[in-house]
Image (cartoon, rainbow, N blue to C red; front, side, top):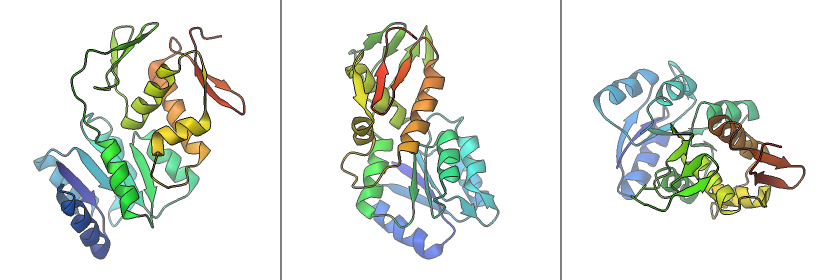
Length: 221
């Protein structure tokens, strides 16, 4: 599987390339936005690991362009850990936002989740005018196919499995980052759910249950 690593620190880039190639990923490395754009023009990548601070600009610009390429996932891998940067990255459609320093096992786990394969399946969950295939990740609302990120698909699958029941925030956080060993900010979950609500629209209401969690409702009330 072909990945693009956009990282301007040569030592960090070399270490990450070694780590990823040891896991049998085919890795190209770019040290600037210009190099990254040149690589993207020549090759198709399933995932871009993207730093925010680059010598000729910031990674947010590239992520915004990649958001339109539905087959290319983006994971930010950066030292910028301000909440505003995390939220911005997720709102641009990134699958994940990982801050440095990080643990190798955690990074590999999150990459695996972002690249989780989608096999064929006929087991489609129906909920009102929503049809969702948890294996392929395809969501259709009122006949319109909705593009969901890997994290959004996992959240929706969990809510559908418990439709009409309250799903705690802790359960949803575990669903996203189970076994990663990382600490996840509640604000990050809120951003994902906000994006999911916007994509599904009012006909698939996800109701907030104050101080507890969320419930997929049969009505918007």
